[in-house]
Length: 158
Image 1: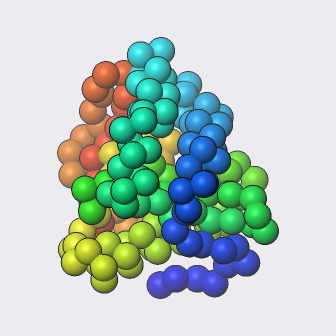
Image 2: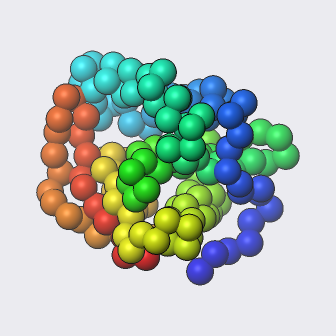
């Protein structure tokens, strides 16, 4: 059930890509980088700075929903392959205020009603596993490591 927040949550515009990737990078460094090897940190940075990913976003094949407090982006979530959450980050100052949950709920609603999906998947970082469990995601497999990235494959029935 969606809760009413004092923040605007909407699809991000093309001109907001850099701000969103900056938020992802900053938050990754604050909360997740310590769990990764140097290889994993570099691979994450390569992912969020990939021009192909930006092109997919510009073409509408990689959706992003963002949360704003006034004009400041405070959270973002992206969807690839119409069902996989590939990035979810919320500014430190807004943790535990319902922003992450609201972003997932909005993306889940979009995936179900607009794309006809029945489930979402995510490769949750060690930092994010507890959050995803709390909002109803279930583990698909035990924690894995690939290319220096540590994650737990999870799913959420829509």
